[in-house]
Length: 369
Image (tube, rainbow, N blue to C red):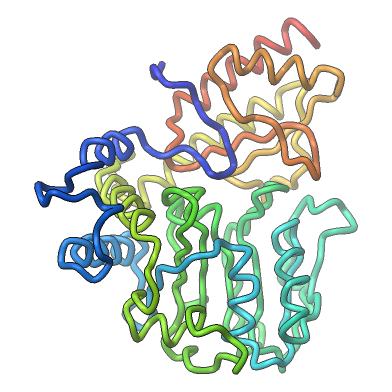
């Protein structure tokens, strides 16, 4: 078992120990240059080399085609809920798939800038699944279709991206993949834009990564702030304004760490996908076998990253959390909007952490059921 506690926080989330240790060793003097990264000019050769390596590694890890620009921005996913319609909607109609709290927030924010419509929703069943593609009522005039591919709060994941063209829709798919970026490959042939807040799988809060088809640039509304205009950001290599330099540096360390990861003969993101499948299966199997714990999400849409679960006897919630903390299992309390528990098992969570949680759950049930 690791000397550190296991941190199951949904975000800001755990960062690989190797990344933290490298950052600590370079804190005051990066590669002998006499400066820490937080002190560097974002236009100096030292930081430019950090930025270029981070961008290159991210593109390589996710096999991002050159037709996509990679933008390092700020504001998190919530800001992107405004920035995306400011850039892509042309103040016209947009389709949203509601599968949880984050897609709800995106839909509500977009109402300020365009005319969003709910094309499908699972709200009536408590956001326990992603609506079937065949049930989506898509608007042929929509400027884009917004889909949160992993709902962090409700634990709903889109396991395979829809092919809008085969559904008769000639509009880009916009995906919020904040909470499962780099946990699995992305089929970029089906995507027009993807965005992710860094604080789940990438690094510290403060950095947002946007991957956008270059053909979608140049359509921002006149009211769009220059620093949030994708075309402006792309033309200036994410340096139009001072970017979140330390967040980019930490993300770059995480990307380098990911490239070294192996699992069953696989490497990089494919290795993480295999490892994440094992971790999720281990935890879901324990929940499904239990008479005390329950997960409400339909099996086909269960998230590999965020696993909400509930004690059938709610009076045991605080006891569970207190005992878990004593065992070195941290941040298991569910989101305030849904209650219960939630284990976020991002890339940085080793399978030993999931096994420790499962062992504790079984022990707890044996004593309290």
